[in-house]
Length: 217
Image (cartoon, rainbow, N blue to C red; front, top):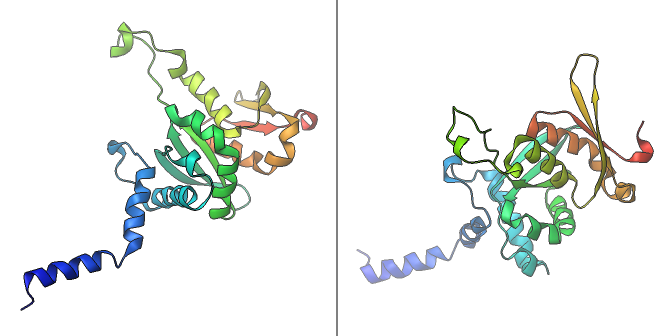
C-alpha cells in the first residue's frame, strides 16, 4: 500500500502534468457571465482563451489586462460565413474602443474566416406604466428600446463613423433602415457590410443596410 505522503506528492506532480487545464482556468477570468445564463459554453471559453493568449503573448498586455467579456455567440452570415458577436460590459466599452481596431484584427486571425464584432451589454427597461414597478421612476433615455438599438449601430461599425441614416417604408409597410458610413473607412470595412446587417437583425429583429454615401442610391 502506497504511503500517504507518497500519494500526496504524486498527486501534486500529476496536477502539474496538465498545464492546459490551468491555462483554461486562468482564461476563464476573461469572461464574467451572468449566473442566470448558466456557465460559459465551449465557444465562449474559446473566445476567452483567445483574449487571454493575446494578453500574454503580444504587446497588448496592458490594453487587455483589465478587460473581460460577458458572453459570445457565433451566427451565420451571408456567403457561408460566420460572425463572432462578443458582448462586453458597458462600463468597459470605451476601454475596448481604445484597442478595438487591432483587437478585432487579431481575433479574426485566430477565428479564421469569421468576422468579429464587439457589442456593449445593455439593458432595456420597460416603459413606465401602471402594470410595472418602473412607474414610480422615470427610465433613462439610454435604457429605452430605441436608444439601445441606435447604440447597437454605433457598436457594430466602430471605429467607423455613421454619417447619416434614413428609413425607407416598403410597399408592404415594413421598414428598412439605411445607414451611411464614413467613406474614408470603405477599404477597411466594406467586406463586413452584409455581416453588419445580419448581426443587427439578430440583435434587434429589424432590417438595416450599411453603405457608403457614394454608393447610395
